[in-house]
Image (cartoon, rainbow, N blue to C red):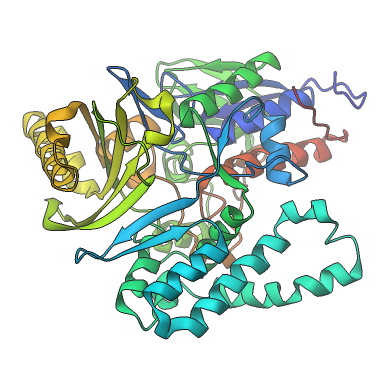
Length: 503
């Protein structure tokens, strides 16, 4: 029974138990739909995941969470509706990361815009005018963020007038990628650092960079203790408490189509699940071109999948060390004396994430550390298929080179390492099905952010797509928002009042 009083008997099968799939499942159950989620892996999360090795937890996703601050922010409300943040300790860091130049100099990326401005001026006084404009925009964006609704800024005409300067700045950053943005700074090191904050993905729109810093400035992009594993398990628990059904180790082979409408799914084990509506929270390319055999697409869809830039393929090297890193920054980016290579993937810098701030990630007195390296999807996938022994040897070589590099920075580290784990682009594809081993979906570039990616397909009724392949930029917010919106749309079509509740 829908809380609004309408009976809903329609069934939905959802492909994928990541953030988007579980979000859709939760909101569907809140509104009385019968739901079944099928997931190829043996646990929930998709790309929002972590894995445990010998007492250490290696996180593959959450670095910060938009909507972490209690209040009227729509993202925060959404996470509460999914049961994701209740009771969790949120850490708001003072320092986001430290970027080193390899010559003894460093630049600290503070989460507070005023501290950030002082640090930028210290490093590059010659860029004073540009720096002050940049940090002023960060503060403008934090005021117009949905969380600012608590102050009533949007409730009066004067409030709207107040955010006009920020809207003008938004347009400026939206049409500029990080590569172009960093050229605004004359100082070579500051220019380089601006390109490293987002992991050296310079095609990313500068708007994403400024908004991220704005969320951090207003303390609305903190880290939930326990990371991805605790976060996704909380949402799965919420879904099951709402009466949802989920099947793991159940990869979809084909979406069943009858009379021009999606009617269910056929699993790779031969099982069939029929439903009134099918929602795919799975990889977009696999959904359109494999599960639906490319029968429901048009030139626009082909153009998107042939020309849009994806988040790159990466390797994640994780290490558990019997070494206490308390007091160290959560992330350090530094140049390498010798590049680490694999196939066409070349790494001349390393960004090392140090989980000393989250005591749940390692035994007492120990620390979990991770780093992302450029990956070559074709190299790793072919190697795994054609020569598994060499594939494993290459992973060991990469891990050894990473450990040697970190040991130079933190003497004694190498001897303290108790466990290592290397996830390659082939690993990402095996466990999540993500196209070309991409670690998210579409990059939010000046081109893609202005493109409306359809959540339906031409010629196919009762079918929807959600998640990072219909919302450039990826990340956790895309899963929450698209999962919620598709159920709102279904409720509208079925003539019922969309309703939410909190646990």
